[in-house]
Image 1 (cartoon, rainbow, N blue to C red):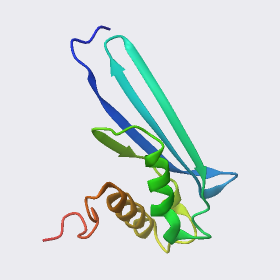
Image 2 (image 1 turned 45 degrees about the vertical axis):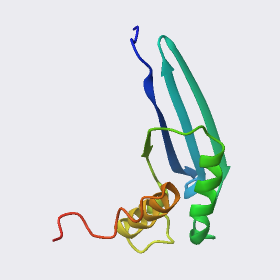
Image 3 (image 1 turned 90 degrees about the vertical axis):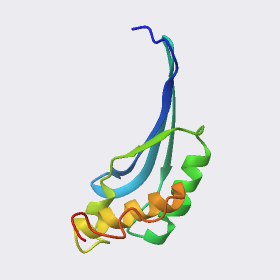
Image 4 (image 1 turned 135 degrees about the vertical axis):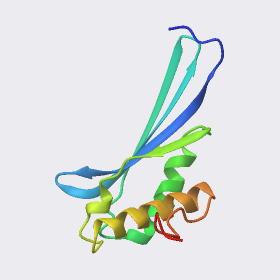
Amino acid sequence: MAHDRATPARRGGDPGDRLGHRGANVKAAHVLREGDATSVETVSRPFEIWKDPTGLAKVLRAVAADLPEAEATGVTMTAELSDVFRTKREGVTFILDAMGAVAGVGSPCSRPTGSS
């Protein structure tokens, strides 16, 4: 499929799962399409969130620094299921707050969805 213009670069990541431990790796990919060409770069860092949850933002910054800039960022996660969090909601909020701090957009979870 031919493209008339460059498709915006995308970056995504997953605070991931290894050996049944939720949140054991941080992985990211950068995808860029230009015409018929697609380039993909990946980065993976070991990170055991249950041992140092406050270190997540530092690891996210390191992973982001190893990839080119992107116009959009997406995230998938399994770390929110780690036993370090009392609830899944607490885990999701913690991870999104760390992502927001790294992206410089503040806390995307400062107010629960649907609240006024």
